[in-house]
Structure formats: structure tokens, C-alpha cells
Amino acid sequence: MKRPQTCPRCSGPLRPDAAGLKTLTPCPACRTPILVLDFPALYTSPSAPPARPVPAMEGAATCFYHEKHTAEAPCCHCGRYLCAVCAVYLGGKVYCTACLERFDEQVRAGKDQDPDNILMGAQRWNYTTLVLLGVLVLGFLALPIIAFLIAFFLSFSGAPI
Amino acid sequence: MADTMKNIPGGLMARLVGHAQGYALHLTPDHVLCRGNTGLTYQHRRLFLVDIEQITLQRTRRALLITAVLASLALGVLVLTYAVLALTESLNGPGGIFLNPVTLLITAPLCGGAILNVLMGATCRTIIRTRAHSEHVKSLSRERIALRALKMLEPAIREAQRGLAVERAVPDTEQEDDALPGPE
Image 1 (tube, rainbow over the protein chains, first blue to last red):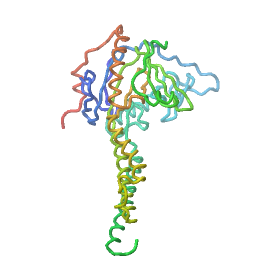
Image 2: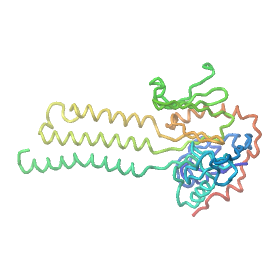
Image 3: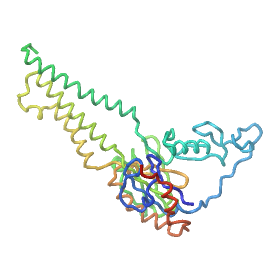
Image 4: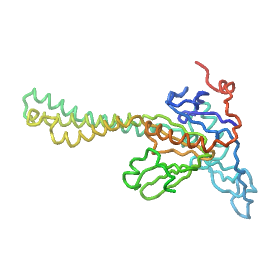
């Protein structure tokens, strides 16, 4: 089954011929230059057998969706216990399908990106850091300019420096 | 194994400092070895060539940001030195502002860093995707190096996946055209 190609930054759909290009071309939605290389493995069916859930023992934690399956990991977003069938591993974290669907809806609606920017390797700026950095740089620039202006005016007033 | 393992461009720091820190890629006949090291822990990850579905390169603005910060700091130091020299009335002293020791010691490395950063080119974010995992390749963070690495990786991956039965190699343009946002 062919999966849709999406931009890693905005998760918007890419141009249909984006995979064949050899240079970075702008994404139609966010204008970020991007290069996508598709390989035949993308268009093949998964060969690995599906994960087999472990039957729940007496007193053991069970899956939120399957009460007869042993829980293997909690969803990192909603915290629900998940069995081998329900756990989806993405970027080293575990998500449940409900959270993934919710993120997908939010991304498609353009309301918000997923909280961890982990889906499809999306990347966003950390605006707090950028603002702090800007303030630091501006402050660093402003200080010597103020000192220079004081020195400049004092030199006209004839006062000893 | 050592004969068949090729170093993929990128991860210069990892190689220079004897693999003490950094991230590097190695290409073997059947897999790509991603070797990350924080100085305290190692992380080796094998991405088998037959499993790699997609490689994406996304240009980032990190190079621009680094250059702007370094240039701003250099300018700041220069203005500060000028102000101090003006205050102490030694602006026309020996050496002037540009040969001042403070200027040379602080501004020159900052300017050098900014120039080096410009010469290294644009930054990018490279992601190798398999069916189960997305690997952010930190060693391929410069666009020029990443494109050079892709020239090594792409033929190897295509060769490894030559036997795969492709279900739909030709994209269904009709459906994709519907999925794309129309002109506004």
C-alpha cells in the first residue's frame, strides 16, 4: 500500500513528483526546501508477522483496550496501558492509536502539531529559546551603544571622564 | 568486516576526537551502522538497507542563526571596545581599535567562527525512515555533506532492494492531486 508523502516540518502533502527530484525543492505548504528519496521498500507489504499479545495473568496489568492481554507499555501521551497489539512505537516512544488519530486530525485541521513533534520527524522552533537569545543579543548590543553615547555627550560637555 | 565497512561523510568531530563524542554513519554491505556517543554512553543502531523506505533532507535555518549570533557578538565586542577606548581617550593610541588585544582575542575568533560557518554551507535535518523507526542522522547536518552521503547511500539501498516486489511503483497521480490543497 502506498503511503502519502508528507513534509517532515508541517506534515502537509508534498508534490507527487517530489520523490523523483534530486535537489531540495520547497514544500507547497510551508515553503521549506526539502528533498525526499523514496525506495522500493516503501511500496511493499510488511513481511514481519504481527505482534502476538501475551495473555493476562491473575493480578497483572492489562491493556486498556483488551482486558485479556498483558500490558506491555503505557502510551506516553495519555498514559493508558497498551498490549503488543495496541502499542505503536514511534521515535523511541510508545503511542496508542487513539492519540495518533487525534494528532493526525489536529495536524490535518491545521490547529496544532503533535506535542512531541515526533510524528513524521516534525521539527519546530523553540520560540522561548529564540526570544531569550534575541533579548540577550540585543542587550549585549545596546549596552556598549549606551556607553558610547554617554561618552560622546560627556566629551561635549567638557566634564572630566 | 573492517574491509567492507565504509565511512559515510559527516561526523567530522566524531572522527577527529577519536570517537569520544558525536555521531557517525558507516556503510556495510547489508546495513548502515549509526553510531552515537554522548561521551558516557554508546548507541549503535543498525538500519538494514532492505528496510529503508525513505530518506528526507529538510533545510533548516540553524546556520543563519549561528552566523547572526556570532556576528552580533563580534560587533558588540567591537562597539564596546570602541566605547572604552573613547572613554579613556586612547582611541588614537598605538594599534587603534582593530589591533587592540581585546579586539583580537575576542572578536577575531567570533568572526572566524562566523566565516567558517558560512563556508560550511546551509544546515539541514536528515531523517532515515524504516517501517518501524525514524532515525535523525545528526552527522548529516550540513546540506553539502548530506548530499554527498546520499550519493553513496542511494545506490547501495537500491541495489539491496532490487529484488523487492513493488506493489505500486507508479504513483496514483489522480488521488494525490485530490489530496493536495488547491490554489487559494
